[in-house]
Length: 333
Ligand code: PEP
Ligand code: MN
Image (cartoon, rainbow, N blue to C red; front, side):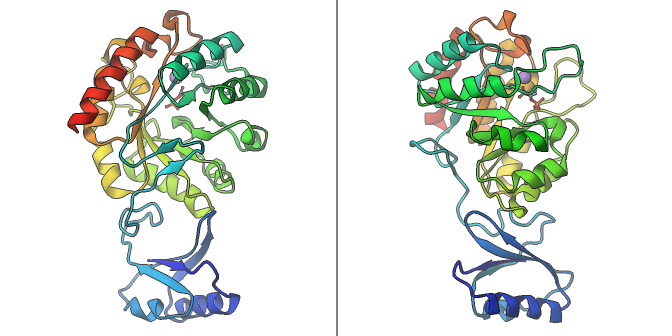
């Protein structure tokens, strides 16, 4: 059960709600986010929720039977949209594209790609500065200095950035140079990291774990929300299956299911989802048709020279073609 509290609720009224829940033998947690106050209660038996609804300071009460509560679609009337400022909003009617290299490599690379995005009306650039790599000998990113250049050069062009945060200690140093924190597949269930990201106001995009279920992704989002941050995006990036013909199995089913289960925007990552450059376009279009709110796509002017994930990275020309196809399909769906 989710109890939405009035924003100006008094301490006495809050106390009364807690006491009533205690008397009913219902365990409950107080949640304060940047937007609202809630009391989340775990109902083990059926109660007449009007008992709670009639208490002073209660705005609304919702019965949510899912294991995750605040990210559930069962209580929120309108889907969530994420406002990055300057008119850049994710969620709602549009299909948002985020594009850029797997890894930030140098300033020249940032400028070339950011200029390209600017001229093609793409408002969000991706690029990792902390890279989770399977081998410790692979390129592991430029770190905080790379992020500072990335942020500055994009800001000059009016472009927002999304980049991966790998550990708790990086949050603070990254905070002022970021528009969206990305939680990578490998950290999808790093609950300490998720808890700490609940304490920031910046949006967080959580990727589905490499072998993560849809429910686990939603519970990861619940961690961040319940720690105080409602600005969340979910990302389907493919899962590990027995199939070896491509890098990951992009789970197209996850898109309508996530949209049905949660009010949060759902972003597709077709690049990691299939891992094969020439098929990234088809998976992107499928995700759009399936109801995704956007896609995050790896892009480089010389994919074959990219420091990481070149095999799944689109060239400028390929991206432009895909963007034109998206415009056509958008009209249909
Ligand atoms: C990435 O976005 O480059 C990345 C490492 O993604 P994932 O966490 O989905 O593997
Ligand atoms: Mn990558």
